[in-house]
Image (cartoon, rainbow, N blue to C red; front, side, top):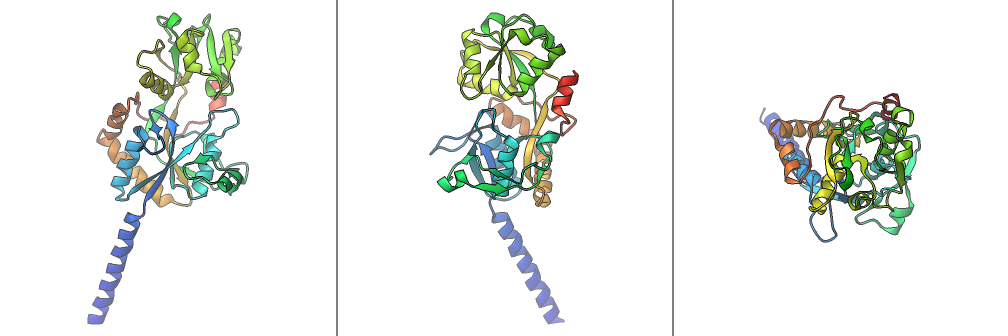
Length: 308
């Protein structure tokens, strides 16, 4: 009998040690290094932003130290956030990617088997050349709603915008290939096309041009306007207060092969949401925080835009 209790005690001790080891295992989260006010990182300095604070809170709830893997997502027509996130996760650079747009098409099994890694902190020359075998993505529950908003230039600051149609007659600027481009170009069978100027993402300064008065309005992600306003407190551009009705929630994304992690993260997110902490983190970061909306995962975005 004593031997049986001794064996039980040893098994319990080993289980406790395993649990402690798991708890000490760092929680690695990938964040974009240049996406203020969500996440920002400059070499040699600690990262800042809403997603950094949230990641710290999640790691604390999971009783694990946090490691952030910073990466750079280029703003151009050829970039694919879905493939970049999948490559980072599949390569083991992190277990979660933050502020991932939760749409049905961003979570489908990738059509290609491999992809290149985005540039990331610590990448070698070989890392920039090699391709990574892709896995299947699994989302967490959302933690923020990310809508598109109309932003007005100085000459149109008093224009009342209650619908996309209210942009008629204004000089519109939009980045080629963006979601805003699709919305403006297809609105009411192309009614706004004659007033649209296309800019090249990553080369042309959309908000700078709007600030100078070169254009009257644009349609872009709300967080991007927050970032411009924080960096340029004296900016001449203003928020219209109008949000396009089709918007996406953002959350974490991991690999489907680790469902236990997603379950644990969802529990932590639910607790933080109920305590009002997530909204507080947004306010601290200068973010216009909007809570998640139904549906949690947006359906066919392009089809919804075309049918409007």
